[in-house]
Amino acid sequence: METAGQVFPIKVALIYGASPSGHYAAARAVAEFLPPSIIEPVFVDLSEVYPDFGPFVARTYLQVLHKTPALWDYVYDNDFVAFAASAFREAILPFSSQKLATLLLKKGVRAAVSTQAFSSLLITKNRRLARMPLFSVLTDFCAHTYWPTAGVSAYFCPEKAAAAALREKGAPHERLHVTGIPVRKEFSGTVPDKAAARRRLGLQPGLFTVLVTGGSRGLGDLEEAAAALKPLLGRLQAVVLCGENRRLCRQAEKVHASRHLRFVEFTESPSLYYAAADVVAGKPGGVTLAESMAMAKPFVVFSALPGQEERNTAYLRRHRLAETAASPEELAAAIKRFQGSPHLLAQAARAMGEHARPHAARDIAARIIESLTGGGGL
Image (cartoon, rainbow, N blue to C red; front, side):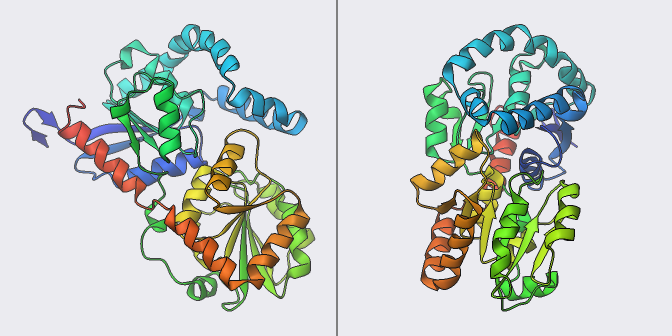
């Protein structure tokens, strides 16, 4: 298809750090709203482009979290460290980005959507990609130091404070758009009510239900959370989403599983579990929170990781959107409060719903289409 010199569909890369991950979920969410006759999505997994780099970063990250979590919190968003890292960006990234540039150009990609800071940096530091429109999508409720502030056609931010942080660091005001964090259509369309969702999942329709999530990787103290809820089973039921952590899932099933406690490996369609839940508890990843808001589910923060998740927690506290449990005992106490107070439960659900932006992916896709077809993006 060709219109006034423009050839359709336009190939657009959706670049994320690894799959599964919140970055990947956000990329898929945006892709769901890109009409195939206009935009042809090209998914690019950085862990496949740089197979040695991805596992190294993941391994280092987990080791630092285990041994010296305060160090990661310091490095994550420290202006001095970021200034020191600028030498790395200027000297190393232009060279490192060549592999990604070659891949994108070989595939005929004409624009890129990045849901991760590193891929945005790679594109902005490569001369061969200098004219390629780049759309950066933040997937946490904060804008950390490593997001580039130049060379980006548009930034899609979760909320006003994140946009303000980018503006203070030099991002042009007119390129900042507050859209929310993109979630997939299954979280913004018609979903079954609690009882129907529970029946489809084989849960008891009338029993108070807790959903515990460790994100796509199944991180956090999931076993400890399950153990803390065991004395409450029968009066409630719980489902623990273990993500890709199959070893934990199998181990926890052997030790803790019962009629009212279930452990689930990674699922492609998590919305049904959210629909079944009265309360969601666990790691406050940006996409997890956006999904909980879209479904208007009360949230209890438990086992937040240093860095972006602690900043997501700060956002929740600032807007009084969630309770925070510093220990398994506090988690059980928070769940008991919600179960014992329908008014508190309804109030928390209403607050989450009021901050929801379930159509963020649609709005982001619309702006990208407008930019590439009528706004001078190409």
